[in-house]
Length: 518
Image 1 (cartoon, rainbow, N blue to C red):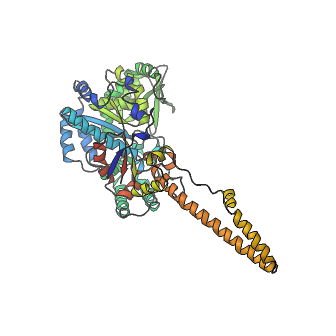
Image 2 (cartoon, rainbow, N blue to C red):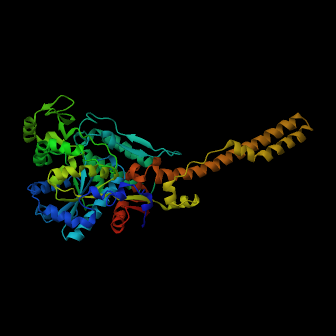
């Protein structure tokens, strides 16, 4: 496998390259160079629940697959306060979700290894699965290619009870297994069959059948195809909620200060992002998931739940499993649960994390290292060949994808001007021998013109087929490859070990986005 730096794809204002420089004034630590300072800061903190959280992590890994021996040993060191963690996270999309979930995982593994070398202590990479999220429409689909079309088809699972209302971690999975099998079939039917297709299909069916939740299916996909050297964390379980109880209380007790701080956290120059600054930043679960809002001293939900602060604190004490975090409180909960060196995020996450820094300070903490996820473009030899045929480099193509060649009837007719003149001359000559010959000559020559037109359209189609191929593989639906494609087409095209092969490439590269030639 060949790898090249590909930073040319980033614009000067991209959060991916701005985070340590252009956004530096809103960070507590500027990148990996300050990981020692961060380690020193969290070493002085008390994590009284580490024994319990390590036990939960060990229990949870059993449902996803085997861990490496090294990571098992490092979990024991984490419990003894002799290790740290590096975190990333994403929604638990079917079939692994968009490809950038894999890149986030590869990035957090890389950053953990870099931190280990600097600190001389183990750093465990953790993938925080967003099972607290309720947006079923964000995780229930994959995009599949369509013949002769630049537009990919969105294949989505059927709506199930409470979809979009309850957290993803609470949704029924088993009733969708047949649909998932059909979706796997469709994904592979729309792909060119390769030497890997049969094995991949069997693997996917096994993973579907072994799983009983969206988190399990996602986790098993990552464990099988990415590796055994990272931890998967499912926060939406009763044992985790019990550990989060003190932090839930703290969020309520500091609610007014946190709301005031967040209301004034945006500064000129920050990337624009919408955050709900009126909410209490906790969800209440009573069959469905409802956001709590504090109005006139009372915590309410849209379905009519009402709590005074005292009542809400009592409810948290008695039933912590009825609460979960939103986009604002989740990073704070992460800070509470784990000795976290840094968080690896995408551009959107980086944008809103910048506004959360004052909230960390309000609670007496500093914000962890904020690190951009790595990006990548996977390019086959066939893709390379087609780019050469189009006389365009990959960098040029990604900046300005090639449109379809239009068929210009007027231009084609202009090219036939001499032929039309010849046709008229032949017809006139044939007419001297009778109308029958004139009619026949016109018919034959028009038929020949039609054949020439059809051949010109076939040539144009061949040119467009090449451009459609490049579009659906390199810049599908005018978006980066990693945002649209799932793991499955990449595994089918390049082998079931392709992400294992990408991992050392990422670790050796300093580029934020790499070009992989496979």
